[in-house]
Length: 81
Image (cartoon, rainbow, N blue to C red; front, side, top):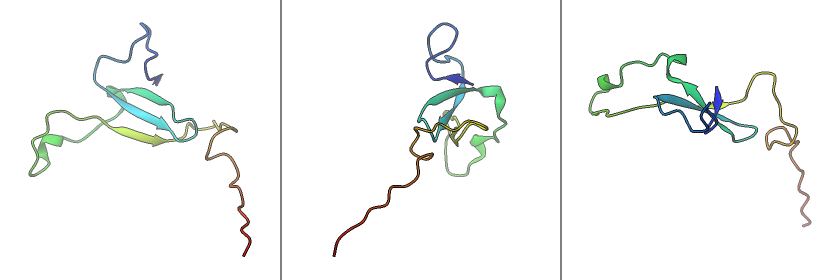
């Protein structure tokens, strides 16, 4: 995967590609088109599909950003009555 906008020539993938959004950092990465097999969207009844891409959300295996929202322990809020 390539960070969004960080391909070899400094621009995003110009070819068809998918996206992965890291839950911990919010970083968007380009995923090569060939990395996934997707069914035929033209077969979706009632829709005329012009184009499609897959957007995945999750975390990189073995990577946890201690500064991330999901890695931080929830703050306990105490309210007075």
